[in-house]
Amino acid sequence: MSGQFGQIVFIIWRESVEALLVIGILHAWLSRQADPATATIGRRYLWSGVLAGFGLALSLAAVLLFFAETLPENAQDYFMTAMVLIAAALILQMVFWLRRHGPSLKTEIEAGLDHAAAQARHWGLFVLAMLAVAREGSETVVFLYGILAAGAHSLAPTLTAILIGFAAAIFTYWLLQLGSKLLSWRLFFRATEIMLLLLAGSLIMNGVDHLYGLGIVPSLGGTVWDSSLLLDDTTAFGGLVSALTGYRSQPDVVSIVVFAAYWALVLWRLSRAEGAVRKTKAA
Image (cartoon, rainbow, N blue to C red):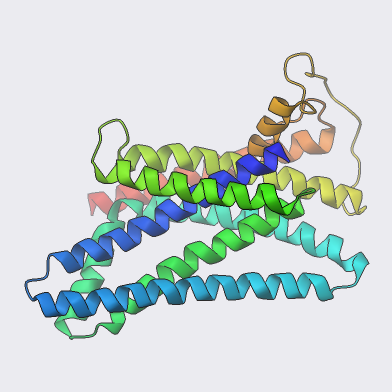
């Protein structure tokens, strides 16, 4: 559970900071409006959008739990395996999207707000806030379900991890708003990008383990090496490293092939995203 605890804390922390970033941009834009009445009305739409986004995310969580509970027992293993792999795919999609759009995110949001203000449409503010919170919230729901589906879990540690993640997110956002040179937005996104890629790799490895257990992935060979003397993934610390990175102290051929293929694909996609960003700046 210690590995899952760390995964949950990280996901809640990372997704909450990103949602707070968008809400902070919207709130700062409202604070710069010359008309106090416009700003007051805008804040009502902003926080209404935040609440609506939370509602959509909670609705998704309820649908997922209901669907999982109604499945036959033999189908639940397949569903949970699918959720583990979907969570990994969503993490990768988020990383690649932010690599391309992250540098211009603030400008794009404010341009949309200026257009909405010119048209006197406060609903634009509501929709932006709702979509920001719903997107991060729904991703968090899928990520958490995928993480919890990867192994055993209990309610109390899970709730504790969620609360710690939220608290860490608020503290991190406060530090980032101070504009500290030690913790800039650029550094934050780069550091968490690496951690997200490691976590996605871990989820994929767990998904492959599930597929192997279901007999979908064949065995290509036994243990290739044993690095338990250096770092045993059955210990508390080794289990945490394994949960956050996909490390295996006794990997088989399938694990090595999947791990290598995953990082080859990631590096290729990141290089393409960097090339697209450079072309955009050059244009």
